[in-house]
Image (tube, rainbow, N blue to C red):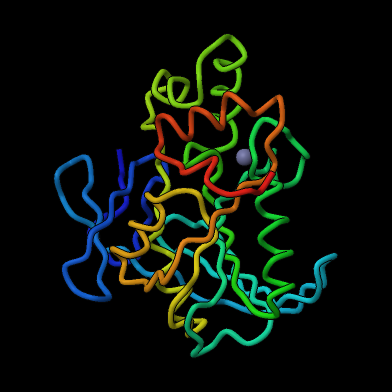
Length: 241
Ligand SMILES: [Zn+2]
């Protein structure tokens, strides 16, 4: 069976293949393939920008493409962020159900809205919207995981029963996105110290972590407790609702 030349720069990588990237040079990223070989990964490429008026004010939306996975990501900027330090920032992974379908199974939609509201109130900031649905397992697998949770599993157990790690998200693309926007350092709105560490390892200067505790309800109480208990999220440390 014909297979793509996985050694060629920018060659297609099956998105079902777990990508674990590592850098041997500042701008060269590689991934280990299941056949033991290594594959050069192209950085995400900036494509175009446009205005994005929202209920929180007018943002600028910047589109990026990942040549390896075909994933499309966007950055929303508000006000002046280039060459600024301590830029208020949210790195948000796609959650179709929470962000767009008003799901109360998680806190994503509320976090997204709160982040955009805070950035608007601050007068400047960045929101990176990364297309890695369901902590990286994809929408259909997320539905499968929700089905297992309906039968009693928690969010981590459900992912593991489907053969996935608890969290497959990758933040490598943030490096080039921040570089394109010329953001010097960030104050990151997150409850997740793993995300802070991942960005720091990529060379992104995270000056501070800003808690973003919002969207707690009866339907996501167990989910939030699992995130705190099994995934290390820092919850219950701020006075936010
Ligand atoms: Zn969600």
